[in-house]
Image (cartoon, rainbow, N blue to C red; front, top):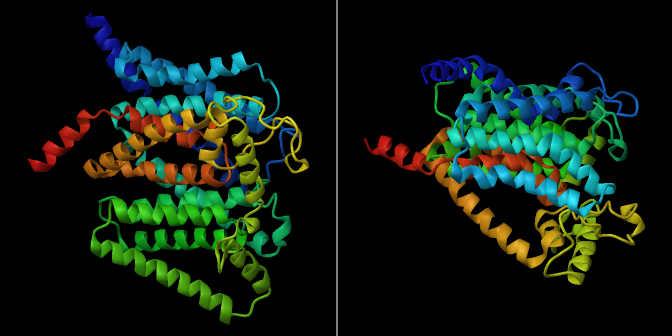
Length: 432
């Protein structure tokens, strides 16, 4: 018994630093990888030419699984209340194997689920059960700084490239990814600047504001609408959840000054790429017309959504399954059968499981939102989850598919694993 006690202490102490690196890496790998390539002036050429990126991903995934297993071994047990969370990824794997759909979007989703989503989900359980996101505060800030520098490194290329050919501008990545990356970095810095306590020097605050301006500039000249939505969502969330009136007014003033500065520059400064910058800036709001939202100017989302409604009407109760082939005879716009997804979280839920699945999903989502807000109210450090949630949730509403979005699953697992007793402990500390 004594030997096991010392072994547990030794293992816990010796692997802690490595565990933090491995866990954060599986969450942040795409962001630091493409940002670093951008800074170095390099480009990801695709797996056809070099498999390096995917070798790195698979290695990182295996290491994450190993450290998760080691953490369970050190703890000696799995808390009974967490057992459903641990079983959930296994159930999804079983569903996929039972479906037997080994091609198209189903296979792609399953592969990404194994290497990104499932390990991120388990990392969320481990960190959430300990409420330990604060330990990753500096790592998260470092990621925000790196991504900001990485996206700003693309500005010279952006302003000299036609808006219609920005498909590989970000280290080989799409301009929409560039916009989302910039928005993630913006919200990370926003959280560190306004939502976390601690003294910051005037020089540090100036640097953070300049990084935020740089991120906004990238979003505007890339024309990526999703990034602007993430930024807006992040600002509103930080304002509602954490800011007192004084800081709220400060945020509004800074935002006003940033927007005013950009408008003045665009209107009154004559530079070679002015037309190009104006074109991308107008693209950000092109879907907003006199009559409201015009989806026909939102990168064909009207086509995706309309097709989803048609498919849902054919199987409204039970849907097509998580990995079912929805588009047996697809519109030529969607490519081969089995590749269609609706680019909207709730439409995708309806496609996968109909109104029954949607009801269950919304019930869990409401509980998740309530608990998340409560966590932040009792412990300000938990707002460090907000950048990951804002990025992933907005992307799922307009671009992604939830079976592939690891950060959404990470935040969900973290919040659901966070022990409710922490609320009572934090409350007693505040009252004491």
